[in-house]
Structure formats: C-alpha cells, structure tokens
Amino acid sequence: MMNDNGTPTLPNTGGSGGTITMPDQDPCKILKTTLNRNVTNTTPNTVVGLLQNLRDNLPANNPQTTGEIGIVLLQTSNGLEANLQQETMIEDQINFQLNVGGYYPAVAHIHDDGLSVPSLADIYFMVKALELNHFDENSFSFVITHYGTKYAFRIKDANALNLWASQFFAGWDLDLPTQNNPMIKTSEDNYAEKVNKNLTTIQNEIGFVQFLKEKNSGLEVLKAKDESFTQWEKLTYNESTNNVDRKPCN
Image (cartoon, rainbow, N blue to C red; front, side, top):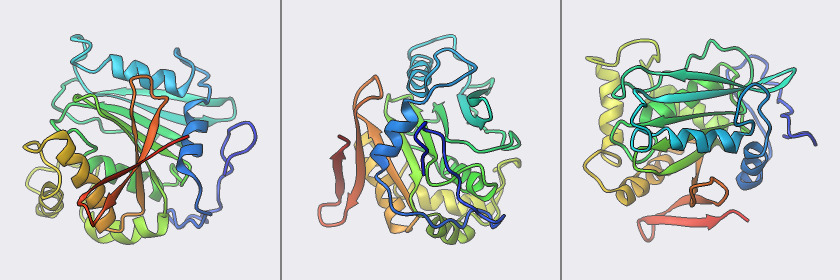
C-alpha cells in the first residue's frame, strides 16, 4: 500500500521469501503514483523522466550506447534514489545486482536482445527480487525494447508467482552462465513457443500475455501507448479471440 506521500507501506513478509497477501489494487493507480515520484540523486528527477531518458538512450536513438542500461530505484530514508547499471556490450543482457540492499519500488532497463517484449530473464529477475524482499506487489519492472515497445509489469499475486516459479525456474541462477544448462534451456524453449525473435511485435505481445496467464504466473502487464510514458493500458489475454484485450488507464 502507499502512504499519502507516495512512499510504500511494506507488508510483513516474515522472511518467508515473498509470501505476501495484499488486497487486489488497481495497477493503473499504483503505476501513476510510481511514475510521478521524485528521485533525489539524479537528473531527470522523476521516475517518468528517467524512463524517457532510457528511451532516448536506446541504441537506435543514441549510437553512443554500447550496452544495455538499467536503473534500480531504491527506497531510502532520504527518498527514492537511482542506482545506474550498464553492460559494456549491447548483446549482453543487463544483470541487475541484487546485492543493492533494500526495497525497490521499481527497476527499469532497455534491452536489445531481439525481443519486442520482456525476456524470460526479466521475469526471473522479479522472482528473485521478491524472494529477497526487494520487491512486493507495489513494485514495477519497466522494459523498453529496441523496437520502441514499452512495458511495465508487476506482481499481482506473490503466492501464485512463487508456486509457479519454484518449478519452472528450478536450476536458474542470475550469477551463473546460462550456456549448457539443460534446466534453463528447457524453460527458454518453453517460452520460445510463445515468444521468439522470428515473430512480429504483435505476435510476441499476444504470446507474452498468453504465457503469463497460462502459467498462472501471478504477474500482470501494462503497456505505454505514447513516447512520454503518460498513457498506459492494461493487457490481458483473451482465450476466445486468441488476442490481447486492452483496458486504458484513466
């Protein structure tokens, strides 16, 4: 839940690795609060301003960008602070350092891995952040792809996410190479049935929300409709039409 000043009231997880029970809240309202929050140690000094800055630093927009860029937004006693992280090679995915202690109201990154939607590693990051009590159901992960698509996804049901992830991501480790790991390959092959580089942006978007729903992942997705990150819509998979239902945020 959020206090009047926009700072989070954290649930008592009791060290249980993210087994949280919270009332179902409107993700659009939580997102609006997060976007408008001030950041104390950087310019731009708002979350939405930092997202716009990341957009401007996509390789397609800034040839000087040599690697993926990510930002961890950390809640401190002084307010919200940004921790910048960057890879040196564009083909390397950003590997957020989860040893940055504390609560993360949001993380954000650009990725140029050929996908027009969040990757499976992006989902796994949320699993680990929840496990380490960095994330809760007020936290957002923002992903801006080289196609210009802009997504925010959050944990709607932490218990459902934990239940699914305990099996699906068995054997995963953010700190170890993924090559030649059969458990990771099995998961990635499963994801590639719905999301892969050979599909169009629309096909991948459908596949992404379908994947999250079919897995009962406990995650929900919103998409920015404009370049300023001020107009958003909630995406859900419609089994009857095999398409995405879009509900605009007011």
